[in-house]
Amino acid sequence: MSSTVEYGLRLLVGLAGGWLVIVTVSGAIRSFVLPRNESVRLNVFVFGGVRALFNFAARHANNYARRDRILAHYAPVALVALPIGWLALVGVGYSGIYWALGVKDFTKSYELSGSSLLTLGTTSEGGFAINLFSYSEATIGLLLLTLLISYLPTIYQAFSRREVVVAQLELRAGVPATAAGLLCWLGHDKDLLNDDDQWLEWEKWLVEIDESHTSLPVLAFFRSPQGGRSWVLAAGLILDAANLLFSALEVARSRQVELTFTAGVLALNRVYRFFDLNSETKPTELRTHEELAASIPGRQEFADAWQALRKAGLPLRPDEEAAWQHYHERRQRYEPALKFLGALLMTPPTIE
Image (cartoon, rainbow, N blue to C red; front, side):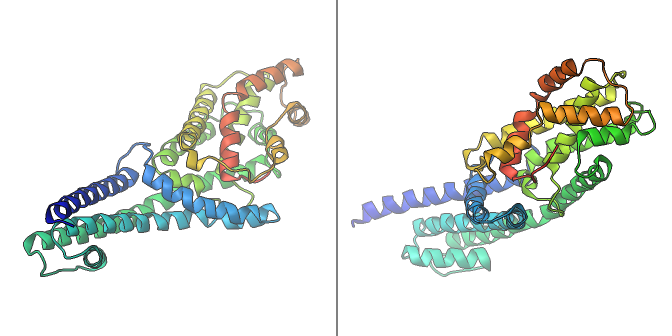
């Protein structure tokens, strides 16, 4: 290889290495610092690869409890894999830069890159320029690890706040949890719509779901501590309860309930659209079509809810069929999101 060709090749590899470092650092910053729901392709690749392994294991589980235990490890493992992927790409990128700056061969460049990234490598080859890049690589490596570690408390605080409401809803909605059960609990003192404080709390929770699960999408995959719980089911429970209130009950509407319903529809659909745009994160058929169909309330389930509300003594509208039509039409605003997220996150099977 002539010296001119080798020089040109080294230059191209160095430019490619610099581009790889910039893209990786930019992805890390957009993942945890940028307060916006921006999809980072590098993260999608890492999470998609880890998810494929967990999906393979989950498909071979013989029951839901086993699948849930397997998938409970997915988000933590993927989160740990993310900085490993970042560091690997930065190491390869700097290897190209060192080779372009005159290090003897690519193997030596990779050794220097690994030493700089994981400790603080220095070399006498190339003098000041190479040592300057070596120190910058050490700084970037430390920055990437610190970035993730510093955001772990933020992630787990958001997870904890989410799960408190999920647990409270389970207590209030009965076993199994149903929208009719939640309405019966709210209406136990016949003051169903005047408890605006409760609906306001749920509105705030849904707004936080909207913000946190799109700006920090890994949160969506953190499963509840109890196997039968899910933030998706909890959000659907609130929306179904508000929908039943609007459709089935002969009571005045509360503006706060309407705000809560709107916030929930927006939150679920925004999370749905965020993940639906990335083909690598689309759900695989971990649940059968029968299980998915059973998780979407139909006419019979509405009839069961109607009877539960009647038994609780709540004021029903005179026409059950008209109430069902109103309920069904309104549910189309969030049912696709519930179905998609339920399959993506493999929510617990429910019986409405």
